[in-house]
Length: 379
Figure (tube, rainbow, N blue to C red):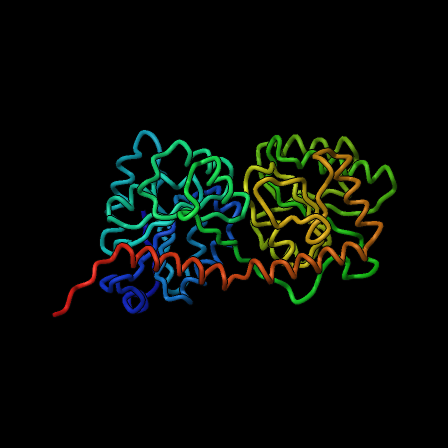
C-alpha cells in the first residue's frame, strides 16, 4: 500500500484541519466508478484544489495514480475483499491516521462500505454519491442515519433516492457532473469525410454493442458508407469480433483501445452512440455533447441530459432497427446533426460547468464540516 502526495510544503500549507469547519476530504473510488467517471473525477479533483479543499483519492485500482497532481494525494491500497477485508480496512485506516480526513465521500455503491469504515474510524462526515439504480437499491437496504448527505448526478437519480430509497429530500443534493465544452461543434465539420461513429460502451453481454453491430450491418445493406469505432473492453469482445467478421464488416467497424485519450477520439468523430443499459449513469454521453458530437441514445431512466430533439436523438425503443433508423436520419440530414450537436454543447455549458461542480461540492463539504464543528466560547 502506497500513499502518493504532493510536496510536504504544498500539503502543509493547504491542510489546516485545526480550524473549525476546515475540510480534509477523502474520495473513495472503485474500479467501476473510474470506468464511468474518470475525466469527471479528474476535473473534480482539480476544481477542489482551486477551492482550497485538500483532497485524497483512495482506490484499489492503480489507475488512481494518474490523478496525482500537486497537492492532490492518491492512495492506491490493496483490494479489500474476502478473506482479508477486515485486515485491509485496518491497514487503510492506519495509513490515513497521520492526516485523518474530516469528510469521506464514496463515489458509487462499490465504495460505500470502505467509506463508512473510514468515516467511523475518524468521526468524519460521510457523503454517498448515487450514480445508478443499483446504488439506490443498496441504500434502500442499508442503515443510513450516519450518512450526512446523498449526492445525485441527475434529477431521476435524486427522485429515485427519495421515492424508492425513502431518503428525505433535505438530505439529497443534486450536483451535476462537470465536463469540458468545446468552442464549436465537431459533427460533420469536415466536408467529404466518411461519417464516423464512436461508441464507448463496455463489451459485455447485454451492453447493447451487439445491436450497434447489427445496425451497421443494416446500413451497409442500404448502401450507407460509414466508419464505426468501438472503444471498450469486456468479456463479450470475442463474440462481437466474430459477428463483425461474419457480416463482412471489418472494413467498417474497428475495435479500438479505450485506454487512450477518449476526449481526443471524440473530437475526431461525428456521431456518438450510447447503447448501455439505462440503470447506470455514465459521463461519456455528456462528454460527447461537450465535444460537439451529435449524440444518439437508447432511452435512459437515470439520465436527464438526453433531451429528445434538443441535445440528442433518442431511439424509439432498444432494437437494432431503431438504432439504424436514428443513425440514418443524421447521415441523411447533416444540418440536423449539427443542430443537435450545437444544442448539446450549449446544454453542457449551462448545466455541466466544471467550476459549478467544484463550487457546489466544496460548499457541501464546508456545510457539513461547520455543522460538525465545535466553537470555543470567549468571555
